[in-house]
Image 1 (cartoon, rainbow, N blue to C red):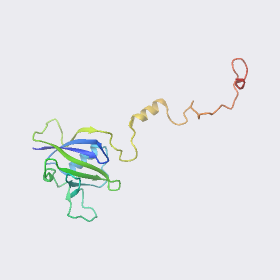
Image 2: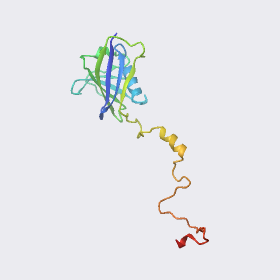
Image 3: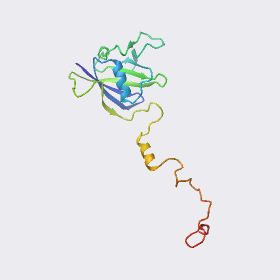
Image 4: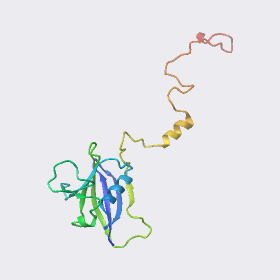
Length: 185
């Protein structure tokens, strides 16, 4: 059984990519799911693949469903189309578009074909992660959830006791050790 290794680049930054492996008999629905998992996206939006050439031009569409739009040719369905059936050459490329409103676009390139299945891997699987993935909703902190723990531990919330605005003075006059007021200094 052939094992296909794909590199999935985030379109806006080629330094951000994920390598995934799948069996050639698995479907584009499996590839769709592993891409979302590898980039930590949810599975709540529409998605589609396009067969592509070396110039990243969009070809035949492989979609979750038939959407209400004009097609040059009817799309193939992800759940029914095996990945192996759409491999035309040894460096086959696909374009993956997720969430048509935000148009998250990923460039997919076949980088390796292996004849031997690894018994330790549950296919499909992510084998390499490079770069910080974009956050699907909003911005992503480099610290992520760890910052919340730090914030709670050290009470870094705004207006915490003991912290005030720069230049803010205390209205009361305090007595100094010599018995005078602090206004004499």
